[in-house]
Amino acid sequence: MIVCRKGICVTDMQQNGVFDLLKLLEYAIEESFTIIPNKFVVVKPNEILTLIDRIYASLPVEVQEARAFLRRREELQMEAQQKAEKIIADAQMEADRKLSEADFIKAVEREGIRIRNQVQEECEELKRKALEEADNIRSQAADDAIKTKEGAELYAEQVLTNLEQDLNKLQQVVKNGQIYMEQLRSGSGSGANYQTATSTIKTPDYVMK
Image (cartoon, rainbow, N blue to C red; front, side, top):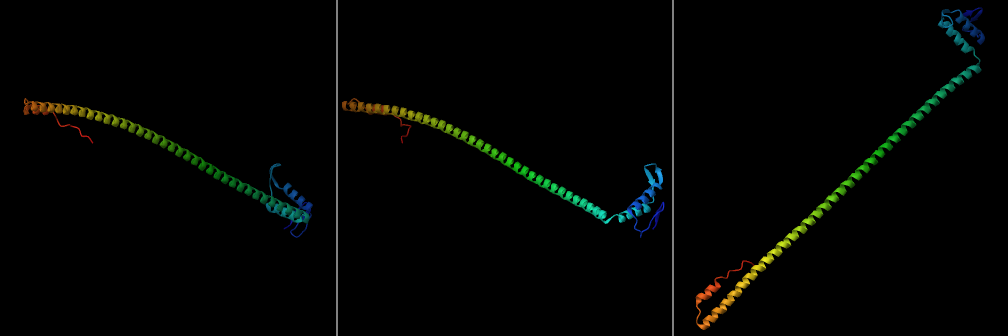
């Protein structure tokens, strides 16, 4: 393929200088069809691409090496940036994970404290109710004991009263018996008088144990 502009020609086998190739590229752009002045033109893509390839091929080895070095440096920078971003992302994920674990541990600790406090409150409530129940039982037992004592004293008093009455009656019987015996000795008494004296005696209605 041959490209010629204003006396300058380029072939695939010809080694032209970079300056000549740049000039040809400039001429190709100047001779292109203008759509909007100083903005858009219509070019022949094959011709432009051929000139660009030739320009790259005509660059000095040092320039190509420098360009390759710059490209490699950009790749290394991109790789380093990607690695750095990955390290940062991994560190952030690890931080989030540890923060989540810390939050979980704190939540568990808070729940443990809440449960412990609840159990303590329930134990205190049970203890309070047990003490109240014990006080009630003691009070009831004391009241029952007082009532039992009062009932026993009243029963004992009643028994003693009945015993006293019966003893008085027995004493009267004894006296009547003595009078009857005196009457018998004097010859003026009869069996009917003794029967009358003893008929007033009743069997005691208490039992002494």
